[in-house]
Image 1 (cartoon, one colour):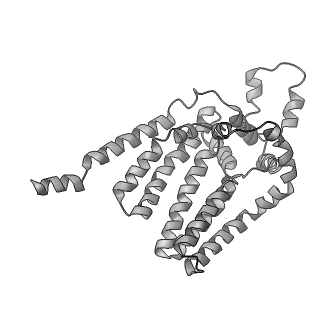
Image 2 (tube, one colour):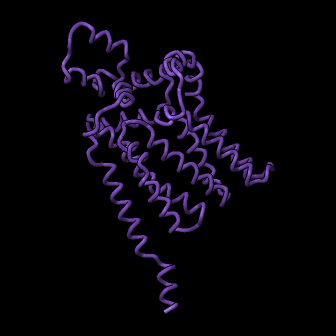
Length: 284
């Protein structure tokens, strides 16, 4: 009897079944009704970027007379008159990392021009966080069960479900953060060169996804310093070198950021025109 009880405790098959059901349901919730939700302001910016049309061009074309929805939508998706250079120039002048938007451009060219298709890219990134969350759970706790529970908790997060259905780079940022964190833990555990190369690549991907990834890098630095007891060890040296490689890969775009920082501050000045409370900041 005791042996049977111990076996049931050490092998919770019912829990694995529950985790599998939760995961399957959350995958479904991420990919259904992608075209039902209204398009909100930030998503229109994504459409604008991948179309390659500047705000000045649109204002010039649409100031004379009312236009139909069909006419306007022609300028929300790529067309033969717009090339990759136009998209890059739009990103260049708006000081925004290019990875998500270039991927979105390739995605809609491959699968079609629609809001459901574009949001489907975010859903795909969100689903890919599944193995990354499992990986980071294994690295932290060396337990498949704990990794599975962590994976399920990520998938039931309301924030992650919302981000998975928005044509914005938030799901990609979540994916890159999890991937970089797992690769760092892998490198610290194994000391393999391939692991440090992987971490360096993840740093570059994170910077090309969102500049707020700098906060994740800072967190990684604090973690490495703490576990190395504030000593300049081989792990800490490799961490610095991996970050250096990532920043070198990002340097072409960092030059763009520095050159257009004043323009970006001017465009973003509206944010500081009214006091921002803590609830407002959380809601944003």
